[in-house]
Length: 325
Length: 304
Image (cartoon, rainbow over all chains, first blue to last red; front, top):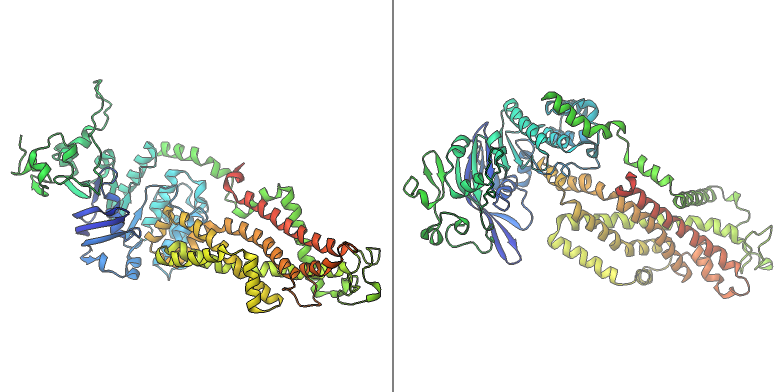
């Protein structure tokens, strides 16, 4: 296992108390796999990635747990050791390609910076050559010329390609992609996903793909983790998940995707209610208030994550290892 | 598929292809050129600089010795020999104004350089690190800002003693908070940008992030503030000179000349008018240039 997150709990201090954004979260990323983390806004998926990268804002901190990268706990590493890992072994791309490049530097300078930071002995010419190679690899036409561009001269899709080139320039083992396609239009989304897929093959890396778009998941991922309120509610291989979603939340998410072939005039299904206020979590299952199949026990006790078939599910419906009708 | 990709990309990048990557400074210069007031100011400032440098290197070009007293000729009305007249000691006002350029400009530039460096450093540290460091630095700056700057400068002068070097220190000290505040504010907003996160992701050190990624994005407001800062430093220096706290006699300084001619305002107004004009015009020139730079550096106005 390349990356193993064990019982990760991340908390934020806010005005009225402490918010637990990620609660006792455990999952792993295997070598060469694309793991998708799905959930709506506020489910803790971005906080998970920021915790791994050590990029939490000042009011947030990892309260407990371990983040094992090749068996070494990243949380115990010093700042210098983390800097050596970031960008070299673990890289990250962000949601907003429009703002993730520094407007005052040429594209080549920004990619070269990443290369030179981790290979201080490399001379500039070589780094530039590598930069142009990377730009070509991520599918930027006439990379020699585009390398001289400033970010504002590129489109969103091009910038996201540059970000990917930058993230991959040191050939990391793990790429964390935090909603890499959300800010792009649909045709470009497909291209970027395709590119991530290709790059995974080419560089033999693992990808942790964070998204709220189940279409993206179905297209790109090998395995899926569905998060709700900072916890995993279901996890399974992508096929198993889409064939037989188990948790009512996963079911709800899948049902609320509009379908072209759907001829009926019924309004689109939606999960009722809102994500509960993290300062006032329900006593039992955090999803109980919004669940169509809520039972008495759901309001009193919190279910555990347990294996059901080839899934892991956190729901009382599957208490006996199979669905209670 | 491949073709679609091409089309999708070329359509969105045609703009980029037509205008070859051009440096930001060139486009700033282009838009500054269109601003007449700023260009006239720039020319005026260049003349000031030339005057300051030339009179320092070749004092011979001055029409008269600015320090030579001739009581017999005191308060001569402006004429062909003494273009701006003479002062109470019979010294040529024109020559003294020319020589004074050096003092005023160097006070302006040095004071701004010193306060800018300190202000940018303090502001960056406060803005980037945040937390307690931020609170301590910024409250200190607030305390300094709560006292009128000229009053504070006078207080510093009282503590440090007289002299132009001390005036520079005093003026530098009192303008640090302004820079610190501006830089801190800008850094607070710039550091939220994803490219700062991206820099952290590629493993950059804090110091490199601040100086390499954050500060260049704050540069435009710093440049504008610094240009305007030169004018206020010139004004402050003149005010100190007027109060007799600046240069030591017989050195020529505009504010000092103004202050010494004050008693004779009714009988010899030209002894005040010309140094006053020199101060106002220089300050005006730096202000207009600063305004022009602000417009030129503003990306919104630059595009059209």
